[in-house]
Image 1 (spheres, rainbow, N blue to C red):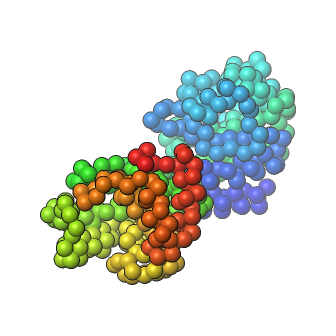
Image 2 (image 1 turned 180 degrees about the vertical axis):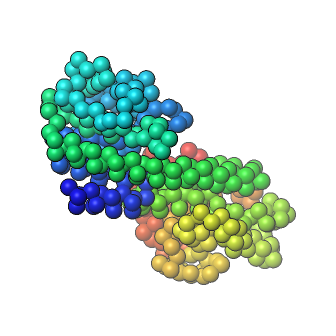
Image 3 (image 1 turned 120 degrees about the vertical axis):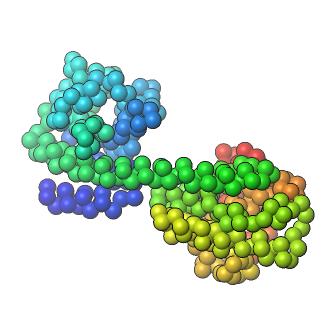
Length: 360
């Protein structure tokens, strides 16, 4: 038991987010007890409901369960009220006829464990649930394991929830910064959100972890932050740029990195996106003339998304290209401007109609 608790603690402390931290704990509960399924529900202040953050094993099925997964456990649910009123773990041998477990027999859940997770002020912020589809008398060893992991979950939830709240605050501020830059040029309206959404689809295609996807998203918000220092006479120029104008425009990359470094919470991978989104696979890009895999993967992913969106939308100097025209151009530039693997991934993502940006 001690070895298992230590293993789960190590996994939890190294997890990048709350869901990742909870999953091995739930897996252990399903493996080490009679529970056939387990889930962790976390309070979301904006909805005042407890939303599913992680799950393991076999879950109930049906419309009631679908609604629970979509909308969370409501604050007025009798079980939530019971957990708010009691600091102890609740064990139900059979939920039928138990007022505190009202609603669970309709899900097919007979035996139930409900463990409260409180913050330092004693507020209920989470609930660990484990269930069996038939009556079951929870044994002493099972209760001991639940007691052990509940204490661990309280620590993990407090640490990771605080981190996620901080990330959420950063998220809003960075997106607002990107949109404010975009507002300076009405012709690029919507670019930030479109290119971010497409980049995330590609990142998911590559199997990036949550922390890498966040860095990619933040880099997408801030990729053109250096343009804040570019004069309007250049930024809004209605035709081809002169060589001096082009040289000044290209400085927005290094200016952007300089500005972004003043935000100490930004991960290095986000700075990579800003620094590398105009590098080219063949080394002919700027500002560092990196080539091939010298260019960070997140930069290579974002670069092709940035060009795709720029070509398929109107700019002061060009009409909007069709998706077919754009993909023909990008495929022709594979191995020169773009990483061939990233181009192939883009084609795969856009082959699904749901992957096409709305403007395309």
